[in-house]
Amino acid sequence: MPAVARIDPKTVFTAEEWARLTRRSSARGVWLVAHAWGTIAAAIALVTLWPNPLTWLIAVMIVGTRQLGLAILMHEAAHGGLHRNQRLNEWIGQWLCAVPVGADLAAYRSYHLQHHKYTQQPEDPDLSLSAPFPISKESFARKAIRDLSGQTFVKQRLPALKALFRPRADAGVVHDSFVASGNARTLRFLAANVVLLALFWLAGAGIWYLGVWLVAMATWLPLVTRIRNIAEHACTSTSPDPFSQARTTLANPLERLLIAPYWVNYHAEHHLFMYLPCYNLPETHRLLRDKALIGRVTVAPSYRDVLRLATARS
Image (tube, rainbow, N blue to C red):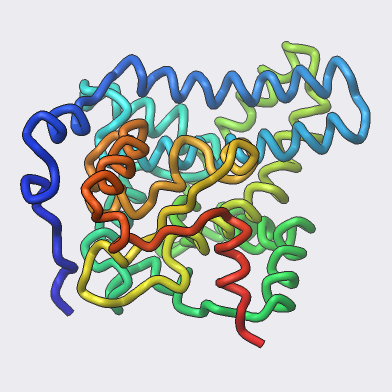
C-alpha cells in the first residue's frame, strides 16, 4: 500500500508557531537523559535508606518506568532530538539510553521509520501490536500476569542469550519497539549491566541492582510497555486521515510518573509532526486545540479509559 498521507505544517501553524515548535535544545535533551538516570538513582536511594516492602514496590515501579523512559529517549535520538550535534545525539542515544535496556539505536531507527511511513497499514512493522484489539478483560489480565511474573521478560530475552552459545546469522529476537536482536547487541547489553552492577556495588546498593533494577526490567517494564503500545494505536482508525491513526492520552501526574514519562502520551502529535522534540508536544496539542483541529485527533482522557476501550470485547 502507499505510504500514509503527511500533513503540511504550513497549513496548520503560522511560521512563528512552527519555528517555536521545531526549536531544539541540546541542553534540554541532555537534561532529560540525566533526569531519567537521576530518578533511577533517587528510587534506589529511597529503598537503600528505608528498606521495606512499600519503598521496594515504589522503587520497582519508578525504575521500570524510567527504563521505559530510556527507551523513549532512544526514540527521541532516533529522530535526532537529543542533541544538535549528530555524533553526540547518536552516542547519547545508543550508550546512555538504548544499550542499558537491551536496544540498538540504528536498528530501532530503521524499524521505527517504517512504522511512521506505513502507520496502521499492512506494511507497518508495529501493526501486530494494535491489530488484535479490542480483546477481553480476561485476555488482558492473562497478559498482565505474564508481564508481572517475569514470563514476558524471559520469553523476550532468553533466545538472545541462548544465541550467544549457538551463533547463527539470524540469532536473536525482535520484539516491540526497542528489544534488540543479535549477538553484538546482547553482549553490549550484558556489558552495560555489568557496569551498572559495579556502580550499584560501589554506591553500597549492590543488592538493589538485582532487587530493583533487574526486577523492574523483568516485571514493571514489560507491563508499562504493553500499556504504552495499546494506548498509541490500538482501536484507532485505519482511515487515510493521519489525524486519526494514533492516539493521544491525557495522562495525569501519577500516570506520567508510573506509565508515560517524557511526553510519550502525546503520540498523535508525534505522528503528525514526527521531528518535533518531545518537550514541544504539549504545546503542539494546545495549538491544535486552539485551532479547532483536536476534534480530528483520537484523544483519550486517561490510560484507564484506553484500557477500558481496548478490553471491550466480551
